[in-house]
Amino acid sequence: MPRLLHTGQIIIDLVMALDTLPPSGGDALASSASFHAGGGFNVMAAARRNGLPALYLGRHGQGRFGELARQAMRDEGITPTLPPDPHTDTGLCVALTEASAERTFISYIGAEGMLSTDDLQQVQVAHDDYVYVSGYSLLQAGKAQPLLDWLLALPGDVHISLDPGPLLNDIAPHLLDALLPRLNLWTSNRHEAQALTGTYTLEDALTALDARLPRTCLNVVRDGARGCRVSDTHGHHRIAGFKVHALDSNGAGDAHTGVLLAALAHGATPVEAARRANAGAAIAVTRRGPATAPRAEEIDGFMAQQNARTSEV
Image (cartoon, rainbow, N blue to C red; front, side, top):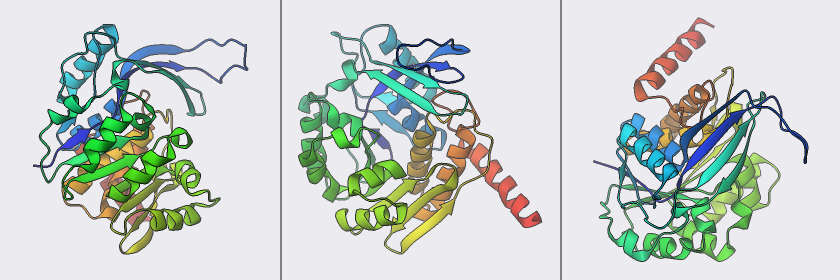
């Protein structure tokens, strides 16, 4: 059975809701504050809730935040492959969500910022596994090169996906140049796709991605409420989003990616998987918090309801 092998980072989110960010040097009162497992946990939770077993290959710390991360993994049925790091705690992200649903992150990396060759060699990778790579991992000096070497040594039939993240431009170019030719899936938002390709429109970004990535690589570019664009061996496809009342966009991209990977692993076509991912992200933004991805049956019900409304119109 396919599994998701997540090589990214689980950190703990301190989530605060406020009307709007204060100016530099200013102050603001939050209407709520709570701790949640976040970062890579969001993708794994989304995949797990949609029937794809998930293993966390990253490190987790010894301390308050590390225990929060492990409890969240236990609750979701996610399997860590490493014991707690005895030397440091898991990192923290302050996630500020404004009334507009826009979010701002400030992160501090802890134990999850390190990963050794020995850590990765403990993992037995099967030919039908889905290996997920986060761009944040390629920013970590204690992780990037061992991870890249391990990825490039995997058998060719192992599926590798990359979500480059918002700090794409800070990744060393030689790391991306080495990884991109091995990808089976690129998944990002439109700003990241345009940043990589130096383009000004989504259509141009997709065309430029096609030129830079392997011919068989599936390219999925999220476009907020408008849905996403998909480029595969059959061409470019516009997959419409779903109209909902958004409360919190934190984790929406992760929900999209986790649902997408689960659908692909269960045999959906790229277009079918992208539509399910759009539905998963649409449901996620109607809920407050980072790991708000819906379960498979919720997506089924939501899509059936949307199809019924379309038929009525």
